[in-house]
Length: 155
Image (spheres, rainbow, N blue to C red):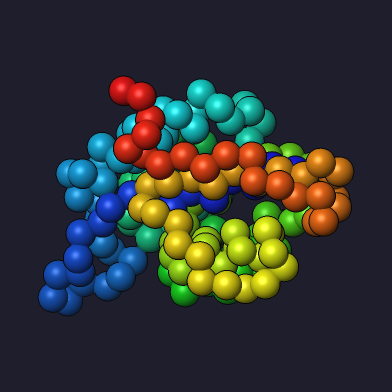
């Protein structure tokens, strides 16, 4: 299984009366999402399953990929790392899954995959961390295949 964690791009601050779920991408965030979406689209297998948080900023980020995706409420801000791993059926899933979500949860998932501990790792806005398993279904065979930041993507 390949598991790709994609943090949403830069979002605006909440305006008075706006909920956290309503925050949209900034102009810079839209550019970040487009650049990373192009890179991911060139790398992901056609069969990749794509799951997104219901927050506006994650929906705008994943839309830049130009592929079908499913909104998953267990990926909303404040989600528990275990809920994300359950949503993607880690480590038992045999297909590739892309998760578009939030900090600190994505960083916690990354640390759990690499160390087994729930640590506060930082995944930068619009960045993607790609994890793979040497042996399908074996969480001990996980390795970090790639880390890409939107500002490193060639235009």
